[in-house]
Length: 310
Image (cartoon, rainbow, N blue to C red; front, top):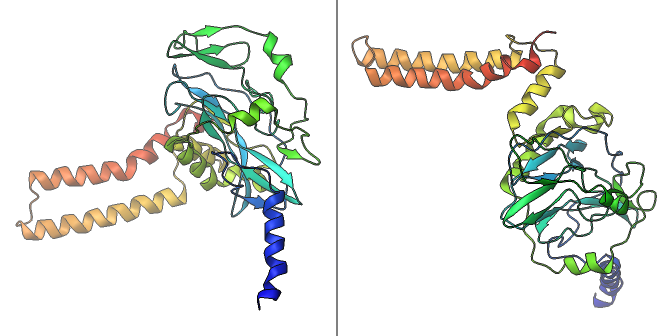
């Protein structure tokens, strides 16, 4: 029995030996698939909404229904002084593996992928920390100068840090032929911080949005970028995709309201029977509260100017 197991054990050891050395943030390739990601879409960067926010570029993620686009978005770093190293797909041994992004004092290797907006394939030139504040390079990133005042202009960094890769979204054969430098490798040994809760919920919301699937949008996602994490905006884009205009309800929304109303009516009937046909003030407040919660979100989506008739 032991002799029979030896070849299998040696095969596993060899496979592990051939894998690239993981960093403290990239303990292992989290996802491995045999289909390459689509090319990166071309999109505009919204202006930074708040001082201190850092741009995290969009990327193709993998889910049960295939690749889906996670929009680029401005997010608050976990703490002052940290920078974002984007995740990337790497093609090794016939499979595409995902190397997750992370926060750290320096921007490490992200496959040489040109994500744009300061992430040209090497490092990050969209800004830097100084005096406890993040300062933005407006030659590379888009900021609202009425809100953000810590800015500078440096165009010289663009050509020095940009990799021409035809929008490839993966590193390896058939994609971007880039290897980490000795400096980037040293950054892998620094202390890293995992993505924030906002970043994780942002990815989960994108995953739940049917319009973000590459199989649906053919590489042109409905929502390519956002100024901040806001799950409701995905819903608005989905409504636009369904042809829903301001003031209209989808069949699902109508059913939701009807179900909520039935529950409320039943509760009111029970309360009235217990109180001689009358509602107490507390019961009235409870009914109003439940009705408001049932329709508030739908009301916001219905009256959003992006879903208004043209």
